Every structure is written in structure tokens, then in C-alpha cells.
Amino acid sequence: MAGSTVKLGDDTVAYAAVPGGRLTSAYRAPGRHPFARFHRTNANGVPTVFGVLSAVVNRKCRSTWYRVQLPMRPNGVTGFIRASALGITKVRGRIEVDVTARRVTLFQDGEEVLSTRAAIGTPRTPTPIGRYYVNQRLIPHDPGGPFGLGAVGISAFSNVLTGWTQGGPVAIHGTNQPQLLGQRVSNGCIRVLNSAIRRIFALALPGTPVLIHR
Image (tube, rainbow, N blue to C red; front, side, top):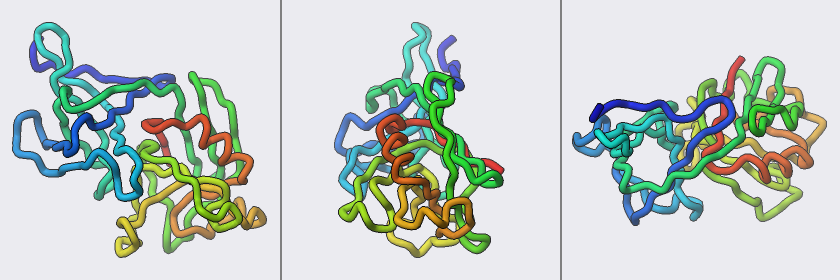
């Protein structure tokens, strides 16, 4: 039926979308006025990515719009983008962050492939709970610095550090202080061993779902 919505993705497969043009508009509902626009690359110079939740299809069951997660405040905001404006790819991983147990678990094709201890946000700068996705992967200039060997950026933002550069984005990253793992010491990011971030960096492709829960 034209206008029907089809859910996309499950525990083993998710979908990522990248803009096909220089500027892509997101709408509150299909065909309404746009409320946000995104460039092909983000502030860090890497491709903009959206996490795909569902598709609006026509009578031929072809996607006309996608409902996607957007890498912007407030956390969890979604919008509709024309299907013709996006390129869609599959991802077969997912990440779960248990802030109570202080562990990060990586799954591939539904199977656990890595579980590692993590440091999380302090009570004043907590790691935000919610459903997000990997939206960028960055290699720090200094591998011996506070971000370790790499950072896997996710679509979450700190709920308290709103004045930070780029709005206080959250990432899963390495560390130069492994003795602090298992503690609540960060500004909201999730820190893991450098050996763990190396594997997460390699397997958690852009669009990979990230669930942060208690």
C-alpha cells in the first residue's frame, strides 16, 4: 500500500545512509518543510552518516522516504529524508554499553565478539542513556594522548556540556590511563583499552547501532 512504513533492521542487521548531494534536508514528516540540513561531510571532514530506522514505500514497494536518526541535538531526534537523496548500506554489528556494569560489548551477526571493561561519565557529566549509532571514526594525532589509538564517535551528545566544541559529542575511545577503567571519571565518553578500541574501530562501521543502558 502506498505510504506504508516498513521497519528496517533487527539485532543482526542495520542500515546506514549517506547523503548523495552536497546538502541534504531532513523533514519532520514526508513532504513538510525541512527542519535541518546536513552537508556531505561533517565538522571533522568525514562523511555524514544517518542511522536508518524505517522506509516509506510506494505501491511498487519502492522506498520513497527513509526515517533516520540524526547526528544532532536533542539526543534521539529523527527525521525523514527523501530516498533519492541517500545511499544505503548494510551493517552487521551492534554495540551495547552497560553503564552499571561498565562494560562495552561488540556483536557481529548477532554473536558476541568482544566484551571489555570501560570507564564512563561522572555523576556530574553522565554518559547519556539511549539508542544511537556510530557516525564517525577518528584517529587522534597523538596515540599517546587521552583518546588513545582511536575514537569511534556516536550520535549522542552530553546532556550537560552543551558549551563544548561541536556541542559536546560522545565517543567510545582509547585511553592513556588504563588504571581508571571501571570508574566514573569521564566527561561522558566511554573509555576502553587501546587494544579494545583497535578492534572496535575495525569492526564498528558507520551506522552500527549503539545501545547505552543501565
